[in-house]
Amino acid sequence: MSPKIRFTDLLKFSKPKTMPYGVSGRFYVSVMTGRAQLPAPQEWVNPKGTEGCVAGFVVPLSGETDKSRLTRPMERGAYALASPDQKTVLKVLVLSKEEAGFHPESCVATSCMGDDLIQRIRSTWMLVQFTYQSFAPEVLPAVEFLHQAADRLAVLTDGAIADPMSRRYVHPGQFAPASIETMVPIGRRDVGEGVNVFTMGLQKFDLPEVELTVDPPQADLAEWFLGGVIEGILKGQPLELGQFMGNPKKPLQITAGGLDRGFWEGTPAFELIPPPGQTVSEAVQSFHDLHHVR
Image 1 (cartoon, rainbow, N blue to C red):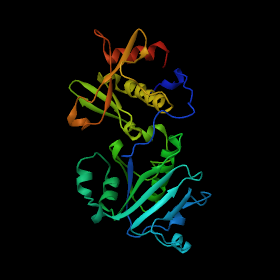
Image 2: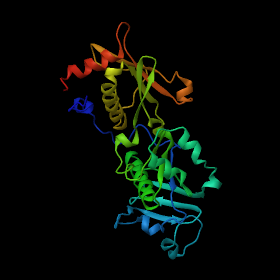
Image 3: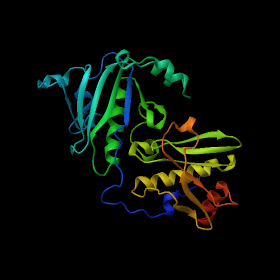
Image 4: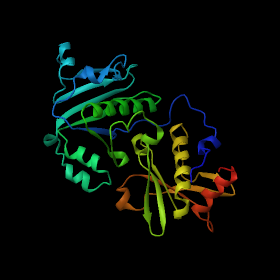
């Protein structure tokens, strides 16, 4: 099923002047480079974003002021990367895979991925880790900037991208341009006779993840519904325990989730549950039917 009308087309969100969330201090992304020699900073980032580069500023944090450093391949060490308005600043740390304690086989053994991505991870030479030093108050532009920078570097190094808080590895070219779907993907897993549908990445913003469990025929519909919930959250409408949503006649209530500790590993989560005598599948279907989505 592929509804033509998006969940958020049915809701009217007004963007607040300041977001009621920020970027988590635990949020990081790593590029696993497929080449021993890295590109020069000026091949990766320049102030105007010309020739395929990311628009921004990059400087080594070694204290070296020689501008020729920007024309030489990047080396082991730290760099500062700033957005054009300098509201977002990233620390970029370049390490050998040995120094980082990176073991490719442990990555490919625990994730479902295609052969090309597996080969890229096994061919890793260097790890380049991105963390936030500061971020734009609008928040989402700061994450978009990170996505652009990581994706461009992965393209230049025949590498791959690790996005741990979203539980995934990504091909270059698939991480940017950033979107709500790439910032917070949606996952599925079979649980008993149902399908658990869940967010993967709201913790990047220090927000609880969200899950709901439906009958298999409603899995696509649940993913559509949850995608709308994510968009509402990131547009400035965080969820609260006890809150109701959906069709008022068959609502879903926000409760404490993450009860499968083996899966969530202590990550805070909300779960959407129905009133007594109803099911999540019925609630999601009724919201869909209420607005005549086809």
